[in-house]
Length: 236
Image (cartoon, rainbow, N blue to C red; front, side, top):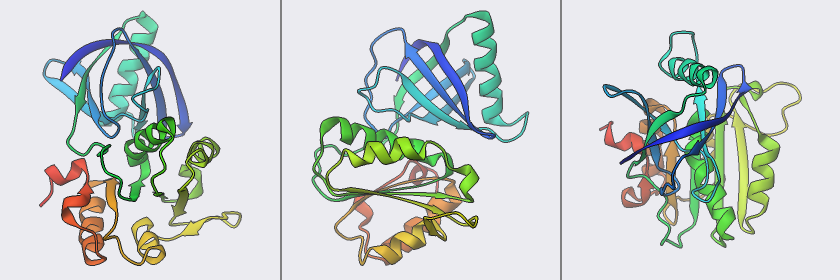
């Protein structure tokens, strides 16, 4: 990985618990959609975050879910705010991960994420939209309730640029005015799709979720060699 300095372009809350951070690298960077970076707090403290932007984007986007004042990600948010105040750059190491988009494949794509795991698949569908891809793509995003959704219209607009793509947001606890699908996101996908055998499957979310989804998806026809998630490196 290459260590680079970045200027902080902006930081804004997407929800009360999720922050969008845009970083402008001080030198050119290369990564593949679906990879992550290490945010350098110190030489002994480097914290991984999925890159939420396309490799073609001007800025590196992070979507940081921060729950609690002393939480691991909130400490990063406070570090970023301190750097804004002092007009200092932040340092990142880029890029890492083996679950990046297989750009040479022409198989249909199933991109599925829970919560801020969305940043992992967002990088992929934005890149595919940039490239004018004709692949068949299904994008599933699972959330606890509608209040956790963010930038839905932007996502809909991006995916609408892809001629053979569909976006399916799913919530577990709907409000009366929720118009989308309801339930556990991977179970909704299993209900919608007869078999996952033809698909390249990309997964992101809490490790426990990814482990369960992998097991259920294999039983639903998914091929292990065509399933990808950074979590696979840490779970049996």
